[in-house]
Length: 103
Ligand SMILES: [Zn+2]
Ligand SMILES: [Zn+2]
Image 1: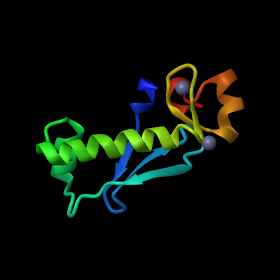
Image 2: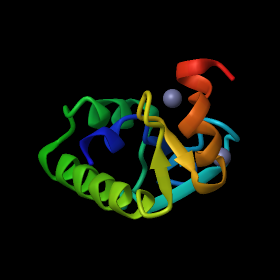
Image 3: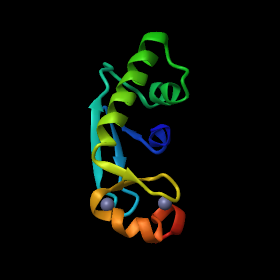
């Protein structure tokens, strides 16, 4: 499960965590982060674990819930751990994904 935390991204406009399949690029969105006005700078701080206490708690929690949710739908490249959608998984199992094998 820990490896799933790799490559989860944050869409600042939608205020949602998401992952993109490393083969077809299809995005899947997770939970919304309940911050009033997240700025690029604040998100950077939170990503580094340097946000204010309450914000950091909220961020960590939302991220954990999102990872749990997203991992029900997406799998991981067995070679490098990138997120892969179900449709692409059979290709990746054999050949690797865009990141580890540069498809
Ligand atoms: Zn895919
Ligand atoms: Zn890979």
